[in-house]
Image 1 (cartoon, rainbow, N blue to C red):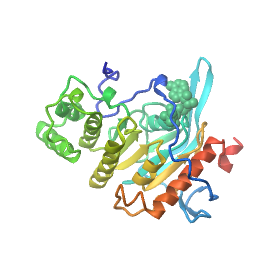
Image 2 (spheres, rainbow, N blue to C red):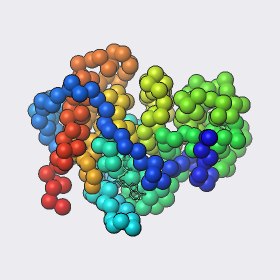
Image 3 (cartoon, rainbow, N blue to C red):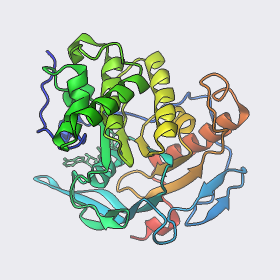
Image 4 (cartoon, rainbow, N blue to C red):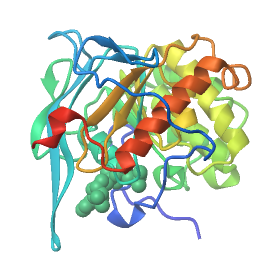
Length: 330
Ligand SMILES: Nc1ncnc2c1ncn2[C@@H]1O[C@H](COP(=O)(O)OP(=O)(O)OP(=O)(O)O)[C@@H](O)[C@H]1O
C-alpha cells in the first residue's frame, strides 16, 4: 500500500520525514579494492593542499559573503533512553550558487544537520543564518527534496497540481504560476504528463515531480537529502545529471546529502565530509573536476578516481572514530 503524506501542506516545498524509525542502516558505498594511501591535512579555513595534491577548502567565509552559514551548531536529542548528541560543533559556509555535497558514515547526523538548516528542527546551540538572518523556521527562499517522494507528493493531486501547490500557497497569480510550472516540468522532462497522478508514474518520474516542485518555487537554496537513494542505478545517473543541469540553469545554491561517495564527487563542486557522531566536519574537499561532467568520461578520469579514493579514505577513518584535532578535546 502506498504511504499517505503525513505532513501538513507547507507554504513552500519543505517536506520532512522525521520519524526516527525511518533512519535505515546505510553505509558509505565503494568497492573494497580501493585502498588508502594519502595522509590529509584538515582544513581549518582558507585553502590548504594535502600531501596527495588534493585541495581542501576553508569552512568559513568573511562576514557577509556567505549565503548560508552554519555556526557552532550542536544538536542533542532528548529521549527516554537519555540524550543523544547527534551534531557537536559544526561550522561551514555555503556561498551563493555553489553545489556542495555532504557525506559521512551512517548515523553521522547528515539528516539532522539538513533539518536544522531547513528550519525543521531547532539546533540545541549555535545558529544557521541565511543572508545574515537567523533561521528560526522554514525560510521562504529554501526548498527541500527528501528521499521519500511517495510521502511528499499528494497522490490525489495531478502532477501539475503537485508542482503548482507551493506557488498557490505563496499567493502567486495564475499566469506566473502557469509559466513557472511549465518551465519546471520542461526542465525535468515531464512536460508530457501534467495530468497524470503520481501513482501512475515510475519512482524516478515521481522524484522528478518532487524536483520540479522545488525548482518551480525558485528557491535560493535547495536542500536535498539522499533524493536518489530509492531509485535504480540508471535513473539515478539521469537524475544526477538533471540536478547539475537545473543547478546551472537556476544559479541556485545546493546542499546535497548522500551516502554514495561516487555520487558526491560526480555532483559536487565541493564535498564536505562529516565525522562519525557526534558530528563535526572532518574535511572539506574542493572537487576540481571540469565543470562539464559526463557519466562515462568523468567517472573514468584519473582525477575522479583520486578524489573518490580520498573521500573514501576519509570516510573509513571517520568510521574508525578518527576525529580532527580540534574536535578531540571537547
Ligand atoms: N528524532 C530523533 N530522536 C532521537 N535520536 C535521533 C532522532 N533522529 C536522529 N537521531 C539520532 O541522531 C544521530 C544522527 O542521525 P541522522 O539520521 O541525522 O544521521 P544520518 O547521517 O542522516 O544517518 P543515515 O546515513 O543513516 O541516514 C543518530 O544517532 C540517530 O539515532
